[in-house]
Image (cartoon, rainbow, N blue to C red; front, side, top):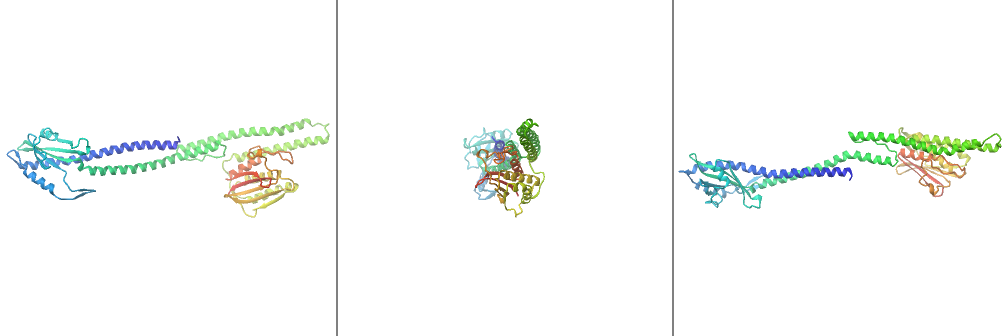
Length: 476
């Protein structure tokens, strides 16, 4: 599982579990708080009504006639009270009175409890014992919402207990407020959860984005691409990217030197063997013509070795860079004209025809002028080397896909099938049919490395009418 998904899923599970527990606790606590809030005023009502009832006691007997008349009139009153979103039109508070034996002598609910023995009910029993008389009973045992709360207060006459007065209120009277509070809690909880989820994802992205960049760049480097690891992220992530970049440079440098030493050793074996063989065979008694042939062979192989080392040094300089250290505006047609002048003797000797297209426009790129000059020189050298005597070489500049593209077309033998896909490999070269010699195999590698450093791409393909077509695209 990807670390991004793992972190997000883990965060959602932890946050979701926490929110569920929190919402469940708050939801349950809302009901408890409203129950407590409704119980507190019942205590006041019970003692107030009990005090009023004590005014109607005669000779130790509770007179409930005025209570009965007063509650009857109260329940018949028409009123409308808008309490936030609740419209209240009825009185939900009821009262019953018991005598000293616990027999109900008054019930505000049309007298339905009168005559019943409530002496064992907690509110009546506890109040009669001088304790806090309270009870909660369900009208429907299977429905918690049918709970009715009762609070009792003692009724005294001349210091003697003569009865109790209980005030009741159903839980459903407070239900609208509790439900509204629950809905508010749920709405706020959902909104908070969404906000936390979004902010959590953004935070995870900000934390993990540098890690993904480092991973992608490390994979590109593992595939052989020349790419540095720029510092990214904050704190430990930035330190990690810097450490990985330093490690990349160290490993790349060691690997680079090892590869080049092995490659150079391999490539120099052939010319050194030819030089040694020719030198061992030359002696004073050898005919002059044969001696001249051996000396020419030594000179050619020596020149080839020198050229290989020189080009290898140039290529090493380019490949060791992950970005351009020097930048300036360079006119590609201008430096190509200068390079053509250096090849003038070759052009005249082989009687080549040079066709120029797009040289009148000022195609300017930003980059390292020396690298660009050597890359164009290698491209021209490759075309001139394989062009037949009297052949035509076409040089064309144009803008394509946002790049300044230089196309070099020759009329040489073209590309053999077995060589396609390998022509830009280091030390890979084809034998020139005219001279019978092979190149250093470094020129085209230098071309590709330079072009890529300048944000472009290079390709070498067969021409539609024969020959080869080298394309070099440079970022504007």
